[in-house]
Length: 113
Image 1 (cartoon, helix red, strand yellow):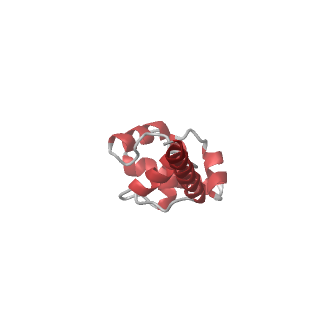
Image 2 (cartoon, helix red, strand yellow; image 1 turned 90 degrees about the horizontal axis):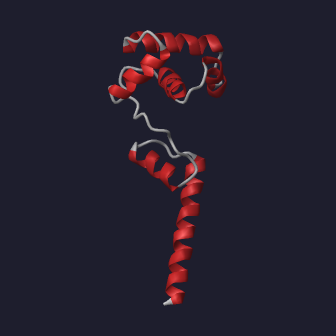
Image 3 (cartoon, helix red, strand yellow; image 1 turned 120 degrees about the vertical axis):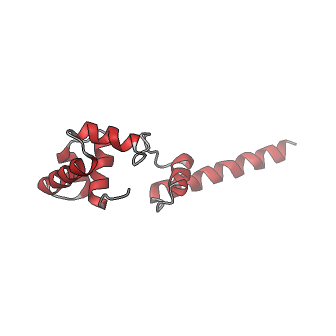
């Protein structure tokens, strides 16, 4: 996200998921004042008056895609891959399970034929 620090990006993503600033701080392992400062800088950079407006402006600008992120399955794995992100362990394991299920189904189909 251009022009936003990693902390500001995280605050924005958590806000988009509906987390309070206190819950955001806990999720990131930061203090509440640090998260509040990041939110303030984020609002200034986006020209927003409220956190909700910041999320809306970020979606409109393409900074956020506005869709819920999936984790722990094939779709979550593919979403990470398409966004060129590091793939989380939960999604990596979900992809392994998906591939095992596809292989098992193919084996069953082959045996039935």
